[in-house]
Every structure is written in structure tokens, then in C-alpha cells.
Image (cartoon, rainbow over all chains, first blue to last red; front, side, top):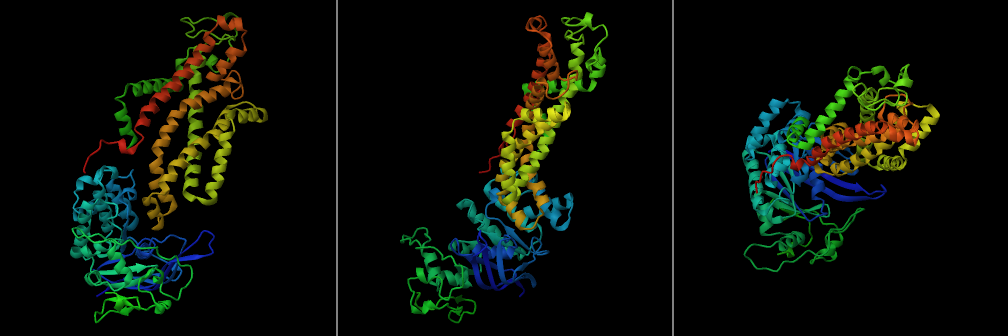
Length: 322
Length: 295
């Protein structure tokens, strides 16, 4: 197995406007994603999941501060404060933006979108980029007819498919999708998810999906990481995490999702993730945790759950979370 | 969609055709006036020797628009003046557009200090009337075309900069610009590919419709005697000469001196406006093709 993405003690923060304080969005993440895997990052807003995904996709803003290392297919792209995504961004790892409506230039036809992307990356000419565009569009279930359409002439779902096709056109091996379904209709959601899952299975594209919808992960992802306050608090096979969540936060996330046909009280999460400016030596979830006790004043380490080698949880009291 | 297609579709609109006809006529006049005008030398300001006999003649077959107070053929003067009018209007708008686009896009794209300083400059120059600058230039450098061009451009660019800034401001926030920036595409490429492309058409149409106003303002500066010197073939100057050289009584006796130059200023302005107006309706890219409904 080849590692597609590897992060070593990755920390990412954002400088505030006065450039004095750094707000840490990702704190000490060690992550390994195999090639061909479909991986999910779950968490509420502010948990750092998008920042982590951006670091993998190579689109961190200039005011972001990085520490630690990120490898993409053995190429070191983030080495503490130096970030170099040349030859990786676009060619190996590509990104599907969250909002299809504002991610396509309304003055360019779909064909031009492909042309500019491929020209910038590989210096392809118009005819070559067109043939690639037709090929990738057929992968996402669109016909070559839409090549001379403008984005506004497509529906939201079609735009999202075009974005997926654009990400595939450069032959990227890893695709990072930031909430790919959050701005499309519920009825289209299944289609987009099915498409991503098909790409993952048929073309062996490594998928990294960022979402706040924990139920969505079960549809496509083999592995899930739950993030809270910049840390991965639970990681493991999706089916196992969904069936028996071990971290109290994962449990709370599950409890606030409605299930069709089942009447159960929805429990909204109280509070929001702590904003962290300096290193803390306690569990960041302590204040919201119903199970919090004295032990939680020290930072828990990643503890393997049971005899499953892939399931880890960052909680001292996970045995009590039933 | 390219400009030729935009024009093609608008050719179905009557007012657009009228505008095109008028503008073509004026452009034709501007290009070929030395051959059209019956007395081209007089058109350029030469005063005929026998002017005492020829002055203030009413319109006739010999002198289509009559003659002025110095006996010059008014039709020749106006025909030759067409080129001056076109040169002034186009130069002013073109230069203002260039500066305005540059300033507006820079302010919106680079943000920070650039945005702050440029916005102050834009507001400053919007507040200064062109006449004041024209007066200053006239007194310090003497009359000439540069007075008209400089005074109008210094005040006009700010309007384009403001419009460009507002358009560009909303575009630079779009995901396709933000993501392009984050993925390391060069600023010049982003501006060319995403920002300029999105705003160039509305700004151009705005510029076309401003050609008329630029001509009006240029004529006003010339009419007040601040721009081009007397004798120069320009409609504003012709009006100025017609009014200043006559008493009120004579003015009533020879109304052609103000009617014809005024008329030409009017129809030229009208021509530009009639072209720009239908184009403006097509501004919105979302209205460019009929909607295809997928949902």
C-alpha cells in the first residue's frame, strides 16, 4: 500500500489582524491516508477540518502559519513554515470547492474552464484540452454538448459535476472535496455522493471529503476522522465509528442528526469549539463533555479501542461512553 | 459572447440602427470632410479676402448653413469640426477608461493601502470640476487641445475607476478568484482571466454611452473659450464665436450661427447614446442567451 497523504504533528494557525496572536485551527494532527482510500473528516464548524483539507490541497492562505510536515505521495509539501506545492497542487492533488455557484467564472464557457486549467498545468492546446474535457465529462455523466455552455446555463448539480470533472481532468490522484453536497439539493446529494464513490472505486482516486454531516460519511467513506478544536478525537472505520462511537463528541454529533422514520429527541450541541491561542494541557472537549472528570485535566493520547488496529480515540473515559 | 454577436442581435432594434446611422455619418464626415466641405480652407479658419461681402449670409445653395461673421462658410466649418469632435470625445473616453480600469482593479484586487489611497484619490478627483482645471490650464499653458483632453481626463477617470472598483470588488470575493489566488496563479493572469473579463463589457458600454457626454463637456469648455483657440474648427468654438461676435439683434438676424453647431452636437450625442442604450440592456451575462431550464 502506498501512502497518499501523511501528516506528521501538523499544526496550522491563523495570524490575527494585529499579527500578534495565532489562533490554532489544527493542533498536532498525525494522519495517514492510503492510496485509493475514501477518507472523511467530520466536525462542526470551527473544528479545523477545512483547514486540514486545505493544507492537503495546497490552498492555505498566506497568513496561515504551519508547523510539522505534510507528505503527499512521499513528496514533502509542508516543512514547518515553508510550503511548496509545486508539481503537486493540481497535478497530484486537486480540490472540489464547496460552492459550485461561485466557483465557475460566468464569462468563460465550460470548455474554456478546462482549457485554462490544462494549459496552466500541462501547456495543452485547445484541441487536446477539449478531448480531455469530453472524456472527463463523460466520467461524471455529462455530455460534450455542455462544452460551449456558460455556467449559468447549468443547474446546481450539473455545475458540481463540472467541478468534479475539472478536478479529474488534470489526472489528479487525490481529490479533496470540501462539503461537496452542502449547497446542492437533497435529491441531488445522492447523485453526487454516488458519483464520488464511483470515481473512488473505478478509477482508484483517493478521496478526502470534508463534511459536517456524519451520516453522509457512511455512504461513501471507508474511514472517518472526527475533529474537534483542531485535533482528531476519533479515527477508525466508518462503519465501526457509526455503530459504536467511543468519543463523547462523536456521540453528540450522532445524536443531533435526525433519522428518517425514527422519532427520537434531537439534542443540539451546547456551546461551540474553544478557540485556542496557546498550548493547552487539558482535554479541549472538557467543558462540553458530560463525562468530564479529574483525569480530563491532562491531554489524552490516542488510545486504541479494543483489538481493532484502526480505531483510535482521544478520550480518557471512552469505556464509559456506551 | 463576443462583441460582434452582441451587435448582430442589437441590429434588430430600430434605435440601435438609428444610432449606428448617425454615428457612421459623423465618422464619415470626420474622415472625409476636407473633400466634402465646399470651402475646406475656410473650414480650418482661413478668413476670405472679400469677407465684407460674404459675412452673415443666410443658408443658400452656395452656403448650405450660411456664413459666419467673418464670411466663412459655416457648413465647411462644421464639417471640418466633426473630426475635432470625434478626436476629443474618443481620446477623453479612451484615456479615462484606461486609467479608470487600472486604478479600479488595483484598488479592488490589491486591497489594503492601495485600496485606501486610490479611493481617496478617486473621491478627490470626482470632486474637482473639469472647468476649474481647464481654466487653470488655459491660464498657465495657453489654449489648445491639451486643455480639453487633460481637464476632462483628470475628472473623468475617477468615475470609471469607481464603477470598475465596485464591479471588481464583488468579483474578487468570488470563489473562482480566491481559489485561483490560493493555488498560486499569478496576479496578472487572474486579473486578465477572471477580473477584467467579468467587468470589461459593462464598462465598455458605459464608455460608449459617455462618448456623448464627453463631446458635450468638451464643447462646453470650448464654448467658454477655455479650450481650443478661436478660428479652430470645433463646434463649441463655432458656437462661442457665433454668440460672442454678435449683438443680440444680429443674433436674432442670424440664428443659423447657433442652430447648426448646436444641432450637430445634439445629433452626435444622440447617436452615441442610441448605440449604447440597447447594448446596456444586454449587460447582464445571465440575459445573454435564453434560459435553458434543467430543474
